[in-house]
Length: 186
Image (cartoon, rainbow, N blue to C red; front, side, top):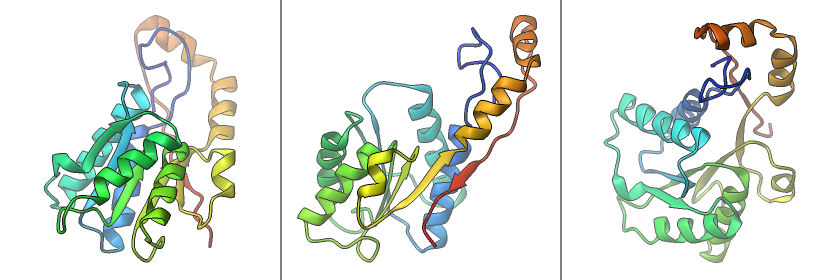
């Protein structure tokens, strides 16, 4: 995890987006999924691009050839998640995803809605993973798996890491590893 912001302009602590997506894909593969969709935002953001690269890395590591049609870019809200999920689920098997990883929980909520309207049950027919533990996501049923950076720990690390400012000014980046937290209900 970089101790400088993505542009190395300001001292900051940022999550390891790449690793978070790898964890999501590894878990889905462990549960037998081989066709895994990825819904990200239209804009190229550090979180979106890091998670997309982690998605691709994990698929390759699992000997799954990344299918370009599995990746959808959309607005980062429930409406975008709904539209992108419908597009993914219109693909014919074996290309049709049995699991979808969403950039954030707002997109995941739209994915839930699309799955419900198509008569699919989560997780029996489709698995969905979101990121960031959005408050509204807690109201969604069924609850999906949710991965997030441990934001409390990130804040504490940032507050106490006085070296971050020195590292940024000096052009060095020692890095701080902060993993993702799996908030899947037991």
